[in-house]
Image (cartoon, rainbow, N blue to C red):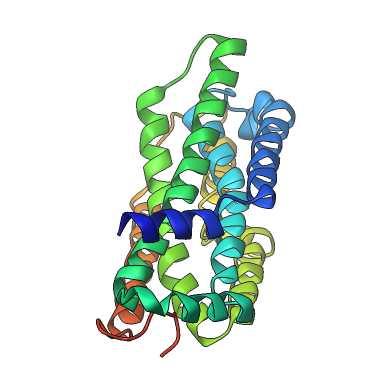
Length: 247
């Protein structure tokens, strides 16, 4: 199994464009921090839960799209041909998919962790104050549902056609930008901007950070959707099928 893991790690992540995209993610995170977050979201402190949550949500959308792009490559015609050549190992498709999910999911988690650390260092270096407990809760609420959406919806749509993965990526952008006021974006950023602005106009001044039950339900629904999709795609592959993502 270790040889298969190393092989998949090499063909999935150990490529120049993957490292380039990771660097772009970190640069984008810094630009968000130094332009929007440093001013505070809806007149809140830059190091408040509102501002940091908005930062995590905005940057998570980029890392999520990058991870979807990497996953879509697994279902390209060229990669399917490579998978057929790997059939000589006798490895089951279900275990192979598990390994690839660990690699892609690990990349997404690592990306978001680096973004989290970058944000904490930036805010502490400038303001000397951060709320690490609140930040960790926000990171979990944003990252974990996105992780299951990535692996569940990504694999389910990719098995049908890689083009559907790109369409789903467009849907993520539309939900985040066009449907901003509804607060249903998969990356979870709009809640922190919309709710903090609403509370500020209602009460006046900065409002203590809070997580509403509606937001928790939304994140839970996305997580359940991703898990169900992941289970569905897992059930469609046979334990003893040949190594490929297609029967």
